[in-house]
Length: 240
Image (cartoon, rainbow, N blue to C red; front, side):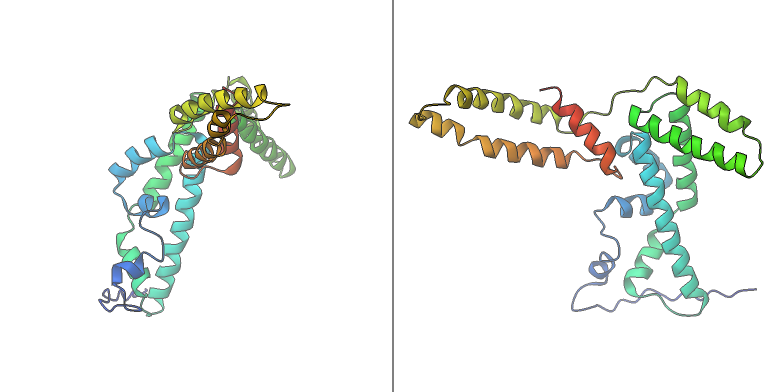
């Protein structure tokens, strides 16, 4: 029998700031991690549908949820010892809801996504590698491999889908068209001095490149790993 002592949230301020401001230092309130931890199950379901459309992003979402789960377990351990949480921990502890249900929901969504063949070539390759490792492990342990082999056949039969378009691809497209015009001006001017007008026109080139880079970076999705994001950027660039 264990007795858990839950201390009331302190209203004291830290370093002259409000309790809410200090709590935000644990996990920023505008972060994806905070949002998936504290939203209701209904909101979470809608949120992951729109913010984590790919299988890879859902995998990243589960990793984040599992880290949050461990964080809460660590806080539980502190409370079990009869010690109070600090303001940031207590505020976050009180706001977190349904982590287990959220993990189960995303796992089911990932399973359904594979079953429906809604994965990219990169994701298919990742899943086949995981499957191959599992088959080898099962063989090593002397366990049946029939289900793993069946899954391998399913994965091999999938015709991969294209990566999701970048969020700001329309804006990037307009900038790339403008850039193409500048590059033509630059190419035609090789071997001679630029006119004043050409110099003024080409002064926009570096600005456009910076804007494109910023829009590409801003298009990165929630929990998207470097490899997946790089492939999406490359797919966008290949169109121009």
